[in-house]
Amino acid sequence: MPILIVAIGVLLLLFMIMKLKLNTFISLVITSVIVAVCLGMDLSQIISTIEKGIGGQLGHLALVFGIGAMLGKLVSDAGGGYRIATTLIERFGRKRIQIAVVIASFIIGIALFFEVGLVLLIPIVYAIAKELKMPFLYLGIPMAAALNVTHAFLPPHPGPTAISVAYNANIGQVLLLGILVGIPTTIVAGPLFNKFAMKFFPTAYEKAGNISALGERKVFKLEETPGFGISVLTSLFPVIFMGLSTIYTLIFPADNTLKEIVVFIGNPGTSMLISLLLAIYTMGRSRGISMKEVSESLSKSIAQIAMMLLIIGGGGAFKQVLVDGGVGDYVATLFSNSNMSPLLVAWIIAAILRLCLGSATVAALTTAGLVAPMMVAGTVDPALMVLATGAGSVIACHVNDAGFWMIKEYFGLSMKQTFQTWTLLTTVLSVTGLGCVMLLSLFM
Image (tube, rainbow, N blue to C red; front, side):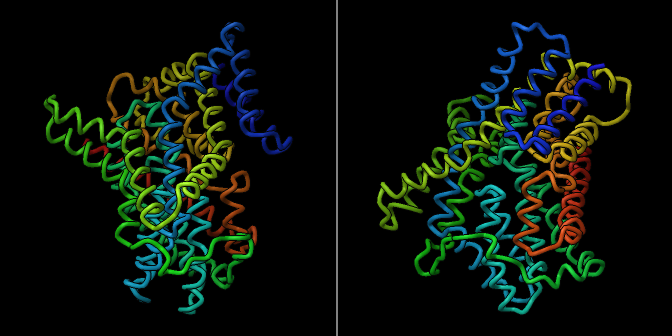
């Protein structure tokens, strides 16, 4: 049975990553080869299938992902993220401090990857919590929730961007719908969950945090950072471009020259490139930073995501093996007579893979390979499939995911407390996200 073969393949992948401590990319490629052989694929075609999967995935993704990392690095190195966070927190005041943290984290989370946003925001949140004599976790929970929501639902983050390609979804539409889903999900998984966690797990809120675990980090003086307005604009420029393009095409469906220009500018690759050029000026040259320093930041950003790109490529290879090996068609057949929504199927499969594999991106990509054939009938919007898959791919973050250990160490929690707070939070986030997607599907 194809499903049994995939299950064994996933277990093998888990064994290589968790027990043998083998590199994730290498583990994915080995698993892809073994699963392809077991599925009865022509031996002469297996490597070309893997190459097709890697090339197809990175061919669509490398430009957006690479430029996105550069953009985030420039904003971070210039102190733009620091300015956004401190300004919003200062404006909102003590009573609405959680709202300020959520908004700041959401904006910064769009521009920066989860780990980078965490490293940038934790010292700021730590200092504010100490000054206001609040539990560190009281502000840390909504911050981490907002960052994880953007990681799950919003391009140009790797997961939603990659599966948008796999499902042939419009990335601009995914972005707009992702924001609609992301806002209520952040509120539920952040401030509302905080109230529950404080009541049932009070000892976790007694922890003071452990920012020494962050190691060496850049310290900013507010007067040396770029202005609040330009920092927000630079961070959100790709969102603005892609969002406006999508809205324009929905309002004016007729083809003409203006629409071609708008669609071209709103293309994720074009939007990211224009935004990067803006960031080079606003976060660099306009502040007297030499092009040599700017170029060094750009080079470092690519070095930091090189392995992530390979892992995403490996996930694409595994997905392609599942597609070419007929597993996707088999899964589609299994559910052909089922009344279960493809959105729910995608969420369930992504959730199971996430629990097994740890990596949200790999879980999402593998799910896309399995459930894409179910979309042939066109009964469900591809953008909603992206969001449902994204929601499933972030459920129950635990010991096989690096994010679990980052939260544990940075927040100074015990293993039990990390499960009680972070693992439960990501589960609430995942279920809430699915609920919002299902609600949206009633109107689309």
